[in-house]
Length: 146
Image: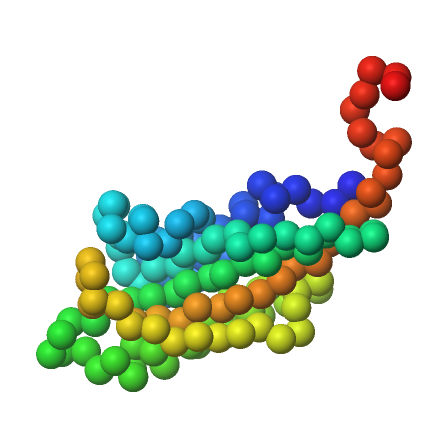
């Protein structure tokens, strides 16, 4: 049996927690958490976008956001974007590591952003797909013999 969504989330959370530059990791709605909670920067957020069930596979589409705070006059936006791009590349390398029971998408879109509410932030968003084997086997369905 393949990995569950909970197991995937746990593994990606571990990637973020083990990265020496990331101080905060959160799975869920990025912008809601930013406006309603305490965050230590640099931070990594990730969310599930959607999923597709294929003949013998399931694909989960995620977005990872890595970001850091910019101090208005003291921090160069390009420097923060450069640093967060490197952290993003580290996350891509972990996702593509062949030791995991998924196949990470060949092409991952990297988008840059700056945000001024609630903090002055800059970072990158990485959109990617994880493909896992899925038998789609009716024998695996827990039933009462029907």
